[in-house]
Length: 460
Image (cartoon, rainbow, N blue to C red; front, side, top):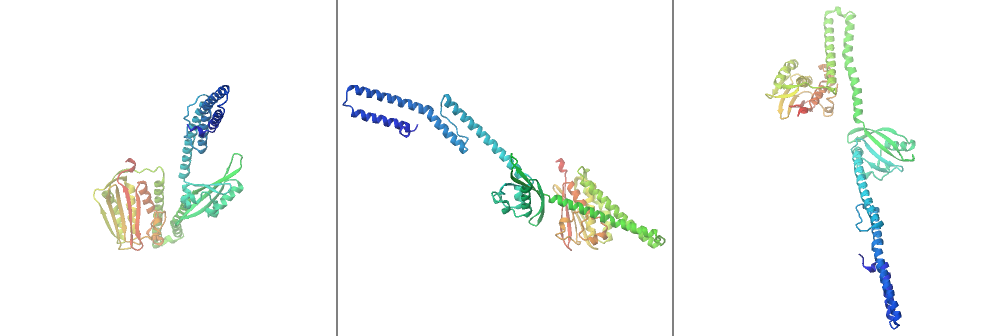
């Protein structure tokens, strides 16, 4: 309890009591009747003070404490409680204030949880997000947006969008969203280092309960992958058309020439039939490779896994490849570590070795060398095919596994390849959950590396 003289009401009454006492001393010479009357007044005043103290402790003090608790609520401190014991209406008020404090505290916790959940969702969405108010100030940017445009949230929050976002397409999207009050869609390109990113931007207006425009939200989608797929599709259609057109044109042209009378000349007949046979064989190989790729890329494609003996597999492959190597007098070396086995699709692993060796022989000049090595590296089998051929430039390496991509287009035509061999190897490695890489330097040769897991990853 505070000292009495710090309470204005008590101090006021005590001051009056002192005044009465001083007056009593001054009137001490008066008659006995006056003294008795003065004593009665003093006793009555003391009783009044006691009553006022009781009123203060039981009514005024609890109200003052309740007022202080409400002040704490206003400040956001919902942990404050009233511990003053009181009965009646004051006690009921204290209990209700404590219940209110608990409810507000629980509400605040729930709001914090919701805010954290919303922040987590916004920050982990795969689309960039920007929240702009009706005056053009940025209130929120998420993590994906920062990865696209750089900087930190502090570089954008509280700034006008046209001061911190330099892209004119974004400016146009925001302005049209506010002007037309409907969703606006644009696309833009963004360079991150040397990489070119394609971004689709959608501006959506935000309205309040009275259907008044209160701002806009920008959603930015990275559609680079879709653009690349679209480009690959267009290139694939164009390349397939071109690859099919060449042998079909040759077959049709030479057949027409024979029908027009050239078949009577035996030498010409033999030459043209040989060309028709070669072109039809090439056409057949192209179609077979396309079918292989189609099967490998199906979502429901399943490998026929067995225990593959690498020594036996290589013994089946080498006679097929050695004939091509001998035609170009290429020195074919084979170095296979003994007793290597793995759980894989034997035919697909065989296709990897055949394609890599055929590719190496095709791009290695006569009297060159091709080396096949297969090694056990613990959890993986390492298949390496190296050569001393024409090699691959650094800028071409990322594209050599694309369909129909050729490092040397003129030479590729002469080798009779379909341009799909390395693409098939890459897909076979991926469906086995393995990986492929290449080391190469122009005019010094190449080394292709395929790592396949020894055991089925899905069963481990």
